[in-house]
Image 1 (cartoon, helix red, strand yellow):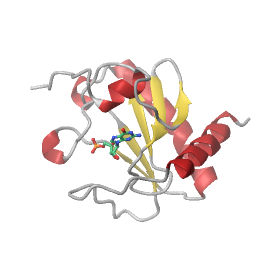
Image 2 (tube, rainbow, N blue to C red; image 1 turned 90 degrees about the vertical axis):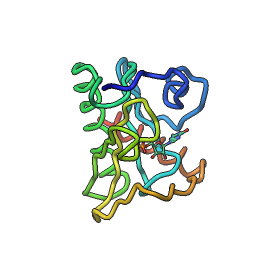
Image 3 (cartoon, helix red, strand yellow; image 1 turned 45 degrees about the horizontal axis):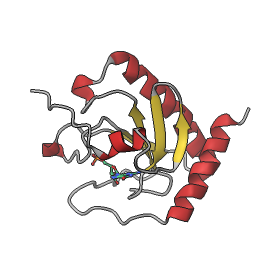
Length: 144
Ligand code: 5GP
């Protein structure tokens, strides 16, 4: 059974502008921003601007929009970070470790598939570095 969407989740607050984020890209249907506890340098999250807990209740038009944004972000990550590889990861349900109950696609730049998301949380990243990375990625996305 699908979980009921809770408007108080942290990503919903980010979408409403109640909590700040280091924005990389935004359009009518999606927002991409830096993960504050990154698995690797340059870790970005892409979220839809709709009330979806996870993949089970994500409307397909928003799914397509999330993937379109993910393609832009991933290409920018490759150029800015100089890392060819990328893990696109998305957890569904608390039993597998989903901790924020608004659909989000992780884009983790890495050439080593040794990502462990459980059990220890990552360290909080330096905000100045996140801001600088977000700016570089945004600039790369909009470069012709
Ligand atoms: P999940 O475990 O649900 O797949 O991933 C949630 C992600 O959200 C984690 O990687 C975590 O670091 C990130 N996160 C949690 N709270 C915040 C926040 O307030 N701001 C940002 N930018 N990322 C967050």
